[in-house]
Length: 300
Image 1 (tube, helix red, strand yellow):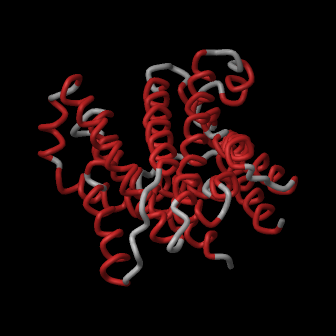
Image 2: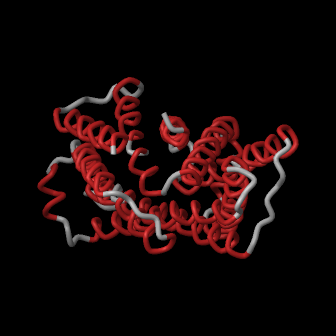
């Protein structure tokens, strides 16, 4: 099995754990604070990754160039913007429909990868993305009162627009991180990914600290009070991002994000095994479609 596949599956599993931990944080702080900890508390661990590779193993530190700085800035800001659209979507009653639209990220990453980097994907990969997308949509709307009818009937709704915008910026972020890592041109995919992660997470931390200082100063105290679980979120989140960046250095962003839909399986399992939530037939069929899409992806 190729290295990028193992890394992507591990990153998806860790990201699910991070989401579970952040769900607990929502009980003690707001959305802004729960979002910040994935960046702010991840900085020390990103530094550790770079330090271990540089001083532990002896890989030389790549020198950032103008292309690297530009791509990192674009990707980091796009990721924050995508998250902002996602949060805004939660204020709408049918936000589950918007979530389904936000999951178009792999397809949009394929488009942006072609436009920005000339990355091409095969017809089989596009089919795999489409199959998995059907499964993701099924799971996303399975617990909505109006289900699939809401999805079809809200194509031109504000919620759908927010979801698509979120998916667009997540797709741009994925391609941007790949471009930033590749622009370093060495010494290897691990160090390139670690340096990209450190630069991105530092920028995002500064931006969010400034935002909270002026717009939500009360969040800072709540974050300090919950520093232990926040540190765990930072560790798991930074490690997952390190995995994403390594995988996207080795493989196109669209293909990595298509395989990353396996996270929905992990999320589904967590909701059943940890939160004891009810299972329905649409969710089961959704899982089957996601697995089928992943199988097709790995066979093409």
